[in-house]
View (cartoon, rainbow, N blue to C red):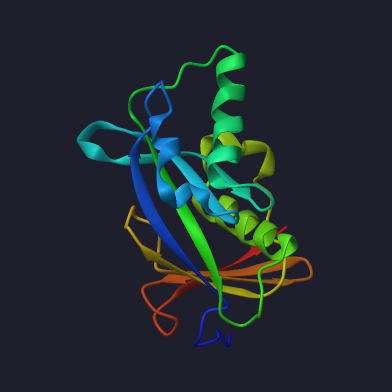
Length: 174
Protein backbone atom coordinates (compact mmCIF):
# COMPACT_ATOMS: atom_id res chain seq x y z
CA UNK A 1 0.00 0.00 0.00
CA UNK A 2 1.38 3.39 -1.01
CA UNK A 3 1.25 6.03 1.74
CA UNK A 4 2.16 9.61 0.75
CA UNK A 5 5.41 10.97 2.17
CA UNK A 6 4.11 14.50 2.76
CA UNK A 7 1.05 15.10 4.94
CA UNK A 8 -2.10 16.57 3.45
CA UNK A 9 -2.76 18.44 6.71
CA UNK A 10 -0.73 19.27 9.84
CA UNK A 11 -2.65 19.77 13.08
CA UNK A 12 -0.67 21.85 15.54
CA UNK A 13 -1.98 20.93 19.00
CA UNK A 14 -1.73 23.20 22.01
CA UNK A 15 -2.70 22.24 25.55
CA UNK A 16 -4.46 25.12 27.29
CA UNK A 17 -4.76 23.59 30.74
CA UNK A 18 -7.60 22.74 33.05
CA UNK A 19 -11.20 23.74 32.40
CA UNK A 20 -12.48 25.37 35.59
CA UNK A 21 -16.18 25.99 36.41
CA UNK A 22 -15.76 29.70 35.55
CA UNK A 23 -14.44 28.68 32.08
CA UNK A 24 -11.50 31.07 32.43
CA UNK A 25 -9.57 28.94 29.88
CA UNK A 26 -11.80 30.53 27.20
CA UNK A 27 -9.87 33.81 27.55
CA UNK A 28 -6.66 32.34 26.07
CA UNK A 29 -5.60 34.28 22.95
CA UNK A 30 -5.26 31.04 20.91
CA UNK A 31 -9.03 30.68 21.12
CA UNK A 32 -9.54 33.72 18.87
CA UNK A 33 -8.75 31.42 15.91
CA UNK A 34 -11.83 30.64 13.85
CA UNK A 35 -11.02 27.20 12.45
CA UNK A 36 -9.81 23.99 13.95
CA UNK A 37 -10.36 21.01 16.17
CA UNK A 38 -10.73 20.88 19.94
CA UNK A 39 -10.37 17.95 22.28
CA UNK A 40 -11.55 17.75 25.88
CA UNK A 41 -9.87 15.19 28.12
CA UNK A 42 -10.54 13.92 31.62
CA UNK A 43 -7.36 13.55 33.63
CA UNK A 44 -7.19 10.08 35.19
CA UNK A 45 -4.89 8.74 37.89
CA UNK A 46 -1.19 9.14 37.21
CA UNK A 47 -1.97 12.11 34.90
CA UNK A 48 -3.20 9.80 32.12
CA UNK A 49 -5.59 11.62 29.77
CA UNK A 50 -8.87 10.00 28.66
CA UNK A 51 -10.48 11.64 25.59
CA UNK A 52 -14.01 12.84 26.37
CA UNK A 53 -15.13 14.88 23.37
CA UNK A 54 -13.71 16.03 20.04
CA UNK A 55 -15.32 18.87 18.11
CA UNK A 56 -14.59 21.38 15.39
CA UNK A 57 -15.20 25.03 14.73
CA UNK A 58 -15.25 26.70 11.34
CA UNK A 59 -17.40 29.85 11.21
CA UNK A 60 -16.90 30.96 14.80
CA UNK A 61 -13.94 31.21 17.15
CA UNK A 62 -12.79 28.38 19.39
CA UNK A 63 -13.90 30.42 22.42
CA UNK A 64 -17.43 30.82 21.04
CA UNK A 65 -17.86 27.16 20.04
CA UNK A 66 -16.26 25.62 23.15
CA UNK A 67 -18.21 28.05 25.34
CA UNK A 68 -21.47 26.95 23.66
CA UNK A 69 -20.51 23.32 24.18
CA UNK A 70 -19.63 23.68 27.87
CA UNK A 71 -22.58 25.99 28.70
CA UNK A 72 -24.91 23.53 26.93
CA UNK A 73 -23.64 20.75 29.17
CA UNK A 74 -24.22 22.95 32.23
CA UNK A 75 -27.83 23.65 31.12
CA UNK A 76 -28.37 19.89 30.98
CA UNK A 77 -27.19 19.65 34.58
CA UNK A 78 -23.65 18.40 33.91
CA UNK A 79 -21.01 20.00 36.10
CA UNK A 80 -17.60 20.75 34.63
CA UNK A 81 -15.29 18.37 36.51
CA UNK A 82 -12.08 19.89 37.82
CA UNK A 83 -9.99 17.28 36.09
CA UNK A 84 -10.85 18.23 32.49
CA UNK A 85 -8.16 19.55 30.16
CA UNK A 86 -8.53 21.36 26.84
CA UNK A 87 -6.39 20.96 23.73
CA UNK A 88 -6.96 22.88 20.51
CA UNK A 89 -5.61 21.96 17.10
CA UNK A 90 -4.95 24.58 14.44
CA UNK A 91 -5.11 22.87 11.04
CA UNK A 92 -2.59 23.82 8.37
CA UNK A 93 -3.37 22.47 4.89
CA UNK A 94 -0.24 21.24 3.08
CA UNK A 95 -1.63 19.84 -0.15
CA UNK A 96 -4.44 22.38 -0.54
CA UNK A 97 -4.52 26.18 -0.73
CA UNK A 98 -7.25 26.71 1.83
CA UNK A 99 -9.14 24.76 4.45
CA UNK A 100 -12.81 24.21 3.67
CA UNK A 101 -15.58 23.22 6.08
CA UNK A 102 -15.78 19.82 4.34
CA UNK A 103 -12.04 19.21 4.79
CA UNK A 104 -12.22 20.15 8.46
CA UNK A 105 -15.25 17.90 8.90
CA UNK A 106 -13.30 14.98 7.37
CA UNK A 107 -10.36 15.66 9.71
CA UNK A 108 -12.77 15.69 12.66
CA UNK A 109 -14.31 12.41 11.44
CA UNK A 110 -10.90 10.72 11.09
CA UNK A 111 -9.79 11.89 14.55
CA UNK A 112 -13.06 10.77 16.20
CA UNK A 113 -12.66 7.38 14.55
CA UNK A 114 -9.00 7.12 15.62
CA UNK A 115 -9.21 8.57 19.17
CA UNK A 116 -12.72 7.32 20.10
CA UNK A 117 -13.74 10.00 22.65
CA UNK A 118 -16.56 8.83 24.96
CA UNK A 119 -18.78 11.82 24.13
CA UNK A 120 -18.69 11.12 20.39
CA UNK A 121 -20.16 7.60 20.48
CA UNK A 122 -22.87 8.50 17.94
CA UNK A 123 -20.23 9.70 15.45
CA UNK A 124 -17.98 6.63 15.55
CA UNK A 125 -18.49 5.27 12.09
CA UNK A 126 -15.73 4.10 9.78
CA UNK A 127 -13.95 6.88 7.96
CA UNK A 128 -15.40 7.50 4.48
CA UNK A 129 -13.73 10.74 3.41
CA UNK A 130 -10.88 11.56 1.05
CA UNK A 131 -7.48 9.87 1.26
CA UNK A 132 -5.72 11.67 4.07
CA UNK A 133 -2.32 11.69 5.73
CA UNK A 134 -2.58 13.78 8.89
CA UNK A 135 0.41 14.88 10.96
CA UNK A 136 -0.12 15.73 14.64
CA UNK A 137 2.40 18.24 15.95
CA UNK A 138 2.80 20.48 18.99
CA UNK A 139 1.92 19.55 22.56
CA UNK A 140 1.93 15.79 23.01
CA UNK A 141 -0.95 13.93 24.61
CA UNK A 142 -0.34 10.44 23.28
CA UNK A 143 -1.83 10.65 19.78
CA UNK A 144 0.23 9.01 17.00
CA UNK A 145 2.38 11.49 15.09
CA UNK A 146 0.92 10.37 11.73
CA UNK A 147 -2.54 9.04 10.87
CA UNK A 148 -3.51 7.79 7.43
CA UNK A 149 -6.90 6.74 6.06
CA UNK A 150 -8.09 5.78 2.61
CA UNK A 151 -11.65 4.70 1.95
CA UNK A 152 -11.71 1.89 -0.62
CA UNK A 153 -15.37 1.04 -1.18
CA UNK A 154 -16.37 -1.55 1.42
CA UNK A 155 -13.13 -1.17 3.38
CA UNK A 156 -10.90 1.51 4.92
CA UNK A 157 -7.12 1.32 5.03
CA UNK A 158 -5.97 2.86 8.30
CA UNK A 159 -2.37 3.37 9.39
CA UNK A 160 -0.58 5.15 12.21
CA UNK A 161 2.98 5.62 13.33
CA UNK A 162 5.92 7.91 14.07
CA UNK A 163 6.65 8.66 10.38
CA UNK A 164 5.04 7.93 7.00
CA UNK A 165 7.55 5.15 6.26
CA UNK A 166 7.16 3.49 9.70
CA UNK A 167 3.42 3.05 10.04
CA UNK A 168 1.47 -0.01 11.08
CA UNK A 169 -1.64 -0.48 9.00
CA UNK A 170 -4.85 -2.46 8.98
CA UNK A 171 -7.85 -2.87 6.74
CA UNK A 172 -11.23 -2.31 8.38
CA UNK A 173 -14.34 -3.62 6.65
CA UNK A 174 -17.54 -1.62 7.06
